[in-house]
Amino acid sequence: MAASKAVTPIKGEFLRGTSSFRNWITKDGSSGFKAESGRYHLYVANNCPWAHRTKVTRRYKGLEKIISMDTADRWRDVEKGWRFDPSVPGTTADTVNGCTYLRDIYFLADPNYSGHFSVPVLWDKEKKTIVNNESSEIIRMLNSEFNEFCETDGQRSLDLYPEHLRKDIDDLNEWIYPQINNGVYRAGFAGTQAAYDVAVREVFEGLDRVEGILSTHRYLTGNTLTEADVRLFTTLVRFDFAYHTKFKCNKKRIIDYPSMWGYLRDLFQTTGFGDTTNFEHFTQGYYRNRDGETIVPIGPDIDFYQPHGRQSI
Image (cartoon, rainbow, N blue to C red; front, side, top):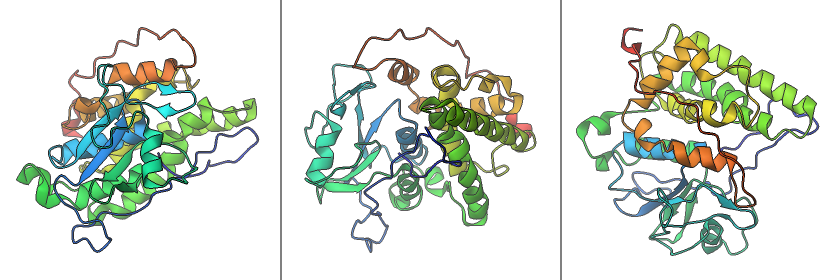
């Protein structure tokens, strides 16, 4: 889950809650949480875009053997939230704490916890507590603090937040998050027509702006793939399947934006991106919940493996 408030607060506006656990893992352990092989564990859900960011980064940086991971079911229980059910394909048990519900993991960390039971969760097996549940911070830890444990030298040298591009990345995140990443939720969960009108307009203003950037840049900052691309990818890959229809963001589809559609295919075909995407889970997760049966749409039928031709940009 990411923490921010809407760009334009208005009656009926969806406001996302804040993340509660904000500790950091550091290479030298000065934070109290030292980067170590096998010590940390990720809890995710395939239909959550915030959790997907951490899955992409973990795979991209070659940390799958270093940081273990469990995956919740695509449907959340109405009362108890995310559930672990290994009988469901693509879902695991809680292999670390043996909990059935994610909420119970929060209570292990803090018996008096009263906030949101959100994914992703980064768990410390040694201290038996939650380190962090803010996706934007988790991906930065995975990017920089575990380099000595990366699977290959190439992955060790990958940097999603390079010093010379940090201002550009931060500037991009500053408007892409409220307008696009969280913007689709502000549109989909709007409680009034006025709130929806503001949110959906900002979604497409943001997408139009991205399209302009990508018409002359392979990635958002130029020729370097960064965390800004990771953060945008997990929204774009869900857009035509869920946000376009379920969240009423139906002015355009991503495939209607020539540069952005090529960019999305480019990322999808990159290690860590397409291979961590579970279309079935997030389609069913958005359209059907445990509180009642809802018909899940059959499509769209989209080929993410078409040649993208972005290398020459």
